[in-house]
Amino acid sequence: MSDQDSAATQTTWTNEAAEKWLSRIDGIEQSGAPIRELLMERAHLQPGEQVLDVGCGSGPSTAAAATPVHPGGTVTGIDIAAPMIAAARQRIRDRDIEWIVGDAESYPLPEGHYDAIISQMGLMFFTNNAKAFANLARASRAGGRLVAVVWATRDKISMFNFLFNSVRQTLDRLNIAYQEPPLDFGPFSLGDPRYVEQLLSESGWTDVRIEVVERPMTMAESETSIDQESAADWLHQGPANALLEGQPKDVYAEAANDWVQAVKQRAADKGLQFDVLLHVITAKRP
Image 1 (cartoon, rainbow, N blue to C red):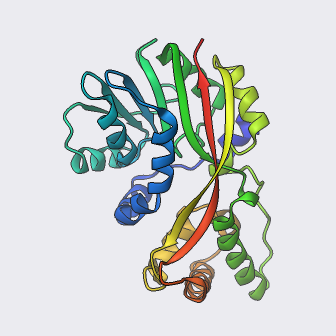
Image 2 (cartoon, rainbow, N blue to C red; image 1 turned 180 degrees about the vertical axis):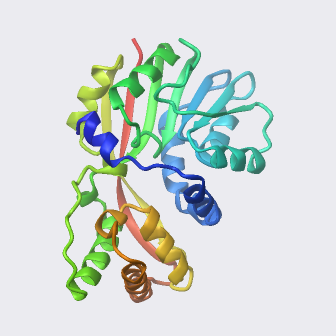
């Protein structure tokens, strides 16, 4: 995926979008726990280390990183969305965590400072990937490491296939034409291992590896945990909006209703769960 493609498909975080995300933050953080646990397993953080958490959102991965680096270490969380950082400061009271509102692609991070740069689903939305990873490489000390969890391409993720199939069925039922987005658009932009290996190798990183891992994730806690309004919000903000963008509100409402019904039909006692394919990116700074 080119940087131009990345720019064309990036998610723009408006204050309104961030506030809607934050209104469901408890469920989102709980759903993301398996990803966060995987990130911490692979990061191997040690006492005294200086850590940067990129795209930290409301801070759950930042807080998780703060424990293993004590004593003597510090963690910095950076996110482009001011409402997210405000929520992180409110939710996480650890005084040893530094919070930055900024774009990690261009923010003047301290050079050669961090022992580990980590990210839980926060690297896929840069405008210029090469510039972003070069900036992170400059901020890493010699011998430092990058550890990140990202989505595979969309076609390999059962959870999103379920959602996209539901939206397609709605549009087909309403006889509305639509265009399929690329498999590596938006949140899936780092899902091609060959692209990621070349990108990082050309941006100052070495020993680039992509590990494919499958972990269980809960899309809905129960058949009653998602209603028409929350489903509509997900369709507006989530990747399935690529199929619906530009449609009137009544089409979104139809798609939301169909998705709610699909969740109810599939959800078991433990909710709507999927075994989800994830990519763990690791690299070193020479």
